[in-house]
Length: 273
Image (cartoon, rainbow, N blue to C red; front, side):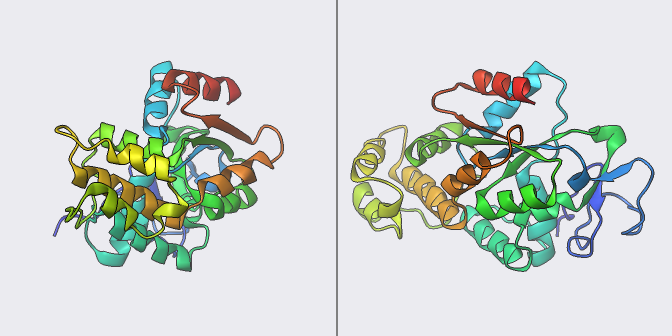
């Protein structure tokens, strides 16, 4: 069995997550060192958005601008805090991960926001205002905004059909689901997915079907659509954005990653922050 995942320069501060080994030989939970602060107390800038909205490219553009400390991302925190303590192994299938994180949220309604806010950070490494990628959905965003008043939020959005195309283009080995072989035509397989009509219009499904070709297998299109549908069952990006728009001025910035390219997103975030 491989070692449990670790989060550098971070450690658990509450019993709800201290089952994960977050760093080598950490101090006993509850013992805070002079250079440590709970992330919930720090003025974090938090990216909000579901898979494929452009968070990774925006982060890369922000790094190129310089000066931003970026915490371990959502995937890494999920592995260490949510998944490994439940099953004791790595999980790569996206639908299985969504199911396991849903189980975590059943016990911890704040989800990722609750887990992140209770971690202690070594401020010698992370500084006092790092950036985190990212939160998803209304429950996480509302918990974060209400419980951690120093946090500020940048919501990135894109239509679901655009998100599918971006997932097809980024070739991330993490974007996989089991059992995506197509037994019929791609359009018939898409039409048969649970909840598909509530997320994609017929015209959008026609467009996704047309992506099939020598360089884009039908199984790949089907897999990426399933990822988007599975995530939408867990998180509602529109509700999260609506909530953020209602916060006091200066706490939230909402950006359209179709209208803005990554460099423009990065500049908007830097100027706002």
